[in-house]
Length: 400
View 1 (tube, rainbow, N blue to C red):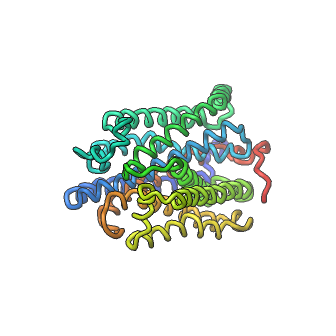
View 2: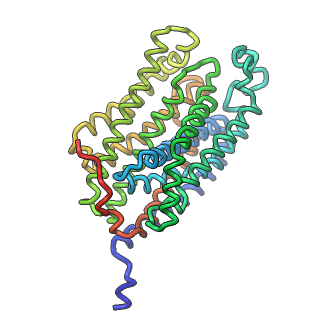
View 3: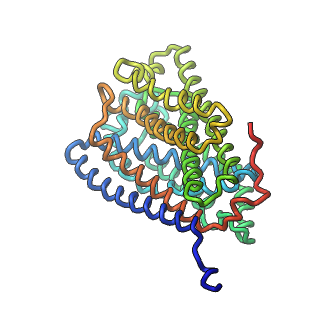
């Protein structure tokens, strides 16, 4: 009997085995990415620098989308999303690591941002008046963004934030709830200005007042897609029971469906306002991406980011299907990567879009990071008591 009480449940064994496999693949991927980076930097240096910027931006925006979900969960004091929020915390933990991944972009800043080259600001009289696009201020703002995001990630995803039921944990959760309003304000300001600095300034003479909202609208569904992948994997590994997971999976699918429509609304609104005004300086962004070279990529982005997931998740039965949700989530994550590629590459690379060795070399880094993230999260969830996943006071939203 004493020996039997220490026996590891079968579901935990399967989960630990799956987490160990993902962890080994991820660690191997990190080593491969270092080797590929060295090769790409020696043969296709400029292209790899641009592709690395896309990869780091893709991973950072996913982390920001996850952080937003956690902050919103605390602000609303939601009960249905307690388990989902704990899982999303693991996605948000990628942000502190993104600080290290973003450092090479600062070292290569002059090769990424055209306004930072010597004499480039002579063509930017409006920007020169306020001195916004200046290297010292740019680096100072980047340090401020990462300091705030890292602190928020540490405060809201640290060990005290896990659902443990201890008095200390409950006190920490209460403090998180009280601070969630100002935290969301900090999140909104830093995300908006970071999108201006890192993406909009790639075409420094182009402006859009809602560009920060566009970046946010792409970050949240990609984070929700990661949450959906996480949820389905936990179910398949037996960490959570499928009968208790259907409502939560359905709610995540509804949120994903809603934010996919939100992205389409913001993307169309930005395009409509610029098209209606017809100012040549503002239409330059879309002229570059709607030309014969980039038009197919633009259409693919619209199809993968909106048309396919919208059609797939339209019915309630599809939202409840783990297979459909898993497939759609993969499409949304891929579409978000294409979205960042579409924002960056036309401004930095001339000619038609192409994929080369440097792009694949840079892509191994975020893929490995996400796999390691899933492995760590599965390992943690598998050690949680099973009754946590079926507590009666975790009320799911009513099904549509």
